[in-house]
Length: 400
Image 1 (cartoon, rainbow, N blue to C red):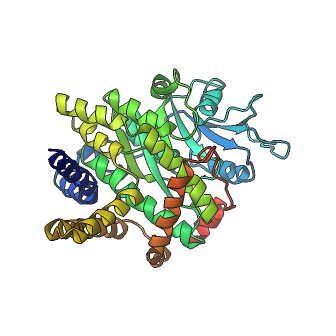
Image 2: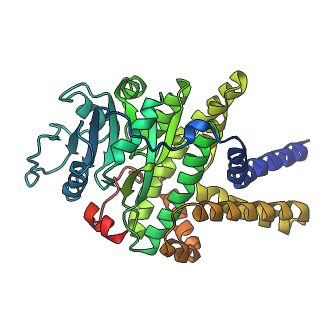
Image 3: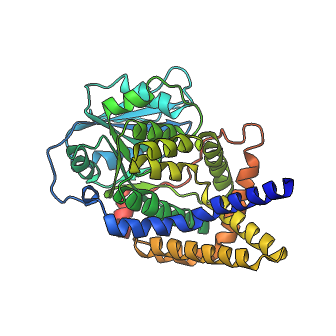
């Protein structure tokens, strides 16, 4: 009896992990058939919405002048930039433009949402919408213009696309490849299939009312506020729109130590919040709600490197135990995943440097295994990502 139970558990575990190999391509096929009309991009610029742009910085300020410069170059007039410099020395920061409000909390906040609400509670006027930008980000001049159509369609949450600010190292290129994969499937395809785009931590915008309703009553520390936020939005029967036109340039990890530190926080976040997905799947099934059901499947999915490594391990266990049928199914699943990954790169604007970096994926995955081990060390997942790349929006425009 015990052997039968263990055998059944083994099969169930394999099915759960194997499902994640084929799900992206299955979702893409479904997306190709249904393509929600509200996922189409609009070329008509509606009237300006009043935005509060919140830029959060923790300990580091050297990238702030560049992000502020890019924000002041927006082809837009109705916005105010709020810089929350948490635990920062701001003695060398000075912004003369009246559209920039520099805030230095008296006490260390050490929390994204605390910084966001520190700014919200000091808005100079009641902005209709807010958008969140990281201190290492740069924005395209039409960033706000490209968010507006979605709010005018009735959406209350919009995720833009985060493109690579730097491709200076192999790690940065592989990090960018990962982002392209997720933007394609968890953004464009997921939203187009009738569900919601996942939130990426920055380059996202909300009605101020929705943001306050979702998070104002919570005190979220550590990484992962976007996981809590997206779950709260979906549970309110709202959809998160996705647009590839609202472009934010994001610094990619260029050093191994930077990668391990960042990924350890992200992995810990998944372990902390993936449970939200089970309830969402259940509610989606009960209410026949496609948005909740499909989004719940995304929430319970392990990080990319984890299910890939487990897939390879399971495949060879089946090979060693003589289960050639199961081994063949695993090989087919891995092939389908590779095809799906290649499809995401091929249908996106992928730099040649990124393609050349793919041979180093094993090393990239090994470092993420180290990140997984680091989450079990004291304070291993509480260190903010250090930023090393000082790029200006003018530099990016010259490269195009």
